[in-house]
Amino acid sequence: MSTTACDSRADHSANENSANTATQPLKGLRVIEFTHMVMGPTCGMVLADLGAEVIKVEPVNGDRTRFLLGAGAGFFPMFNRNKKSIALDLHSPQGAQIARELCATADVVAENFKPGTLAKYGLDYASLSAHNSKLIYVAHKGFLPGPYEHRTALDEVVQMMGGLAYMTGRPGDPLRAGTSVNDIMGGLFGAIGVLGALVQRGITGKGMEVQSALFENNVFLVGQHMMQYAVTGQPAAPMPARISAWAVYDVFDVRDGEQIFLAAVSDAQWRVFCNALGFDDLLADPLLATNNARVEQRESLLATLRTRLAHHSAAELARIMEQAGLPYAPIRKPEELFDDEHLIATGGLADIRLPDGANADAVVKTTLLPFTLAGERLGVRSHPPAISEHANDLLQELGYGPAAIASLRADAVIA
Image 1 (cartoon, rainbow, N blue to C red):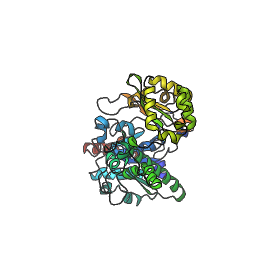
Image 2 (cartoon, rainbow, N blue to C red):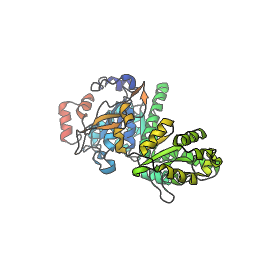
Image 3 (tube, rainbow, N blue to C red):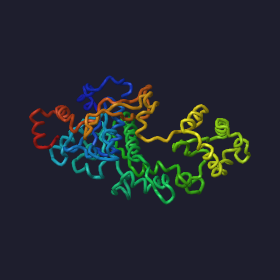
Image 4 (spheres, rainbow, N blue to C red):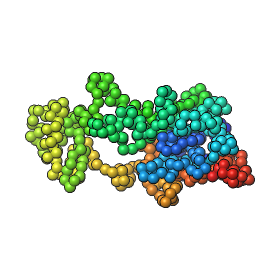
């Protein structure tokens, strides 16, 4: 990271809690983030959770993502923890100048706007790197440079054109995945690219541009199905109509309208499965002796199992499978995970305070990154910021006095 950036913000962690610095490998790194929605904010959140100081630059009336309803209501509080906020009018010369001054102190700049948008304000990689050769610039786009790069992309768009919706839905009924898989993973790949660029900068002293894209991310996700066709010559069928590699690998309707996923993916597991459930006759059937033989009999075998298992409760089957060491899963809704004993026991959920809307200041649980460093989860050091919550401190750091800040605010250059 640049010496200037480090020296100018030596005390930026003063408001952080006492989280173990061993779990903040990016502490001292400054990231300026021009992002909205999910993809870019995910990248910034990963870097922030790893200890970086991430400064979110928003429009003066706030990132519109803050105010989404329905399925978008969780976007801002989920992906903007551990960040600071300054709201600037980039359309004004003064606002764009302040943004450029902030970027001059940065190790990393992250953005996810349409190609050419930030170039209008001198905030593109070419403009910024001309004055800071150590800068790492990560751009999150719909498509990498090529014939599609100027198209407007959404997670749903690339899922449809990239084969994922085809694989998820029933034949003739493409269905997008139930969460923002490409947006989130695109942000993760952007963060991975930044980490790689940081290692390279440590060797060469030079930064670079990193690009991550929704479409290419989606193609990576379905690459295994592309490879299946390359290897076998057989097109991959949509998941609901697939030829399963295992006979017992499905959701079963059981007593009281409940459902449970059960699996036995090897001959050894099949023996344990039959013994645990008392299916001695199935275990003795020569037509079911091997996994491949059971796959050939899968339709009739599943019909038999569905009839026999329908009288059990999901809890009873879960107990049997647990004791036998077999794979199983209850069918849960997202809201039920707040009470998951494993997540609670392992610290997988953490408190955040909501910054906006009717529930502003309410404290709720959020999910943490799914890994540990030095045996610890990466926690919440600061709540998702209010609009321009850190503007005064950041402007003072850049050398703006109280009168200048007041003038900027009066002219609506800052919020």
